[in-house]
Image (tube, rainbow, N blue to C red):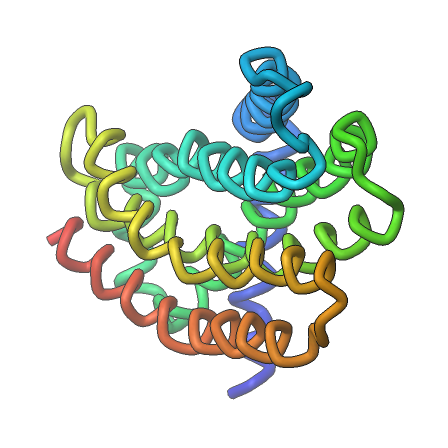
Length: 226
C-alpha cells in the first residue's frame, strides 16, 4: 500500500516538475514580483527617519505572501480546464496525497526561487548575516504554510471566474498567524531573547498545516469539480 501511495506521489511530482521546467514563466513571475517589490518599497520610505533593517523582515514576509498568492490562482485552474483533476477523483490514489505532491512541487519552485533571492535583497536592506540566516530559516517553514493555504484558496475558487480577489480574501487572514510568529522571531533576536519557543510554535503551525490542510484542499476540489 505504501509503495502504491509513493508511486502516486512520484507521478504527480514528476509531472509538475516537467510542467515547471516547460513553463518557467508561471513561477518566474512570482520571483520577479518579489524582487521588484522589495527593491521599490525602500524608495517610498524615508530611510533617514525609519530604521530600514527593523522593518525589512516584515516587508520580506508580506511580499513573499503576495508572491505566492500571485501564482496560486493557476495551480489547479489549468488542470481543471483540461479535465486532469477529474482523473484524480477516479484514480486509485487518495486525492489528499496527490494534493500534497502538487503543493510541494509548487512550493519547491515558487518558494525556492524566493529563498534564493532573499539573501541578496536582505543584504541591500542593511541586515546582518545572522539576521539573513534567521529570515531564511523562518521563511522555509513559513512558505510551506503559505503554499498550502494559498492552495486551499485556489481550490475553493476553482470554478469561479476572475477569482483572484476572492483568493486573496480567503488566503490573507489564514496566513496572519504564521507571519506574526515569523516576524516575531526576528524581533526576539534583536532583543537578545531565546528563539526556541518561537521556533517550536512556528514548527507546530507547519505540522498542523501539513497534517490537516491536504484533506481540506481535497474536499474543496471535490466540491468545485462536482
